[in-house]
Image (cartoon, rainbow, N blue to C red; front, top):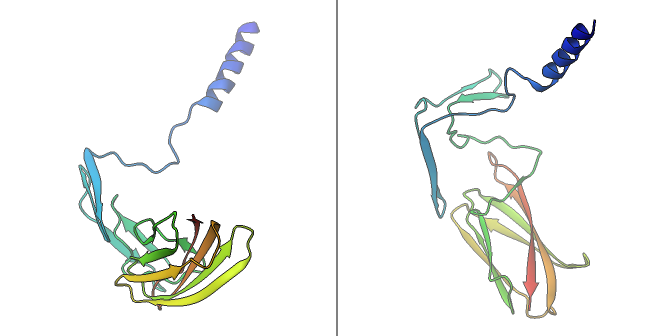
Length: 175
């Protein structure tokens, strides 16, 4: 009887700790890397299928792709969700600053950007609309009238049709 009870407990413990498959997607390939310079990004891998294909449903509501290295969407759909600006799409410099900052929009999307400047307590200071063409736009802000401290810039891109809305909130330190 003792032998069967011990065997039952061992089987129960094993069933909780052993799994046959992983639910996390994974790919094994021989090598690969990524290189980025400015707006250009090159990804490569060795040891995987070179076919990358996309199939869409009849109403274009769903797209299925295969291949490990996925290309950017050919025609991104407008989404109700916000995406964030990636580090390569937006640069704010110099930070910290004494007087002026420069916001470099390097995104390839066009549209209108709403800029809102708040102080650390959340007090509204400045609002402005900027049109970006998707070819690189530079906006300069003069912060010389504000005292030294921490400020936050909220940038929200309302895109042209066929692009994705983006948002970002950035901390600026004025010395």
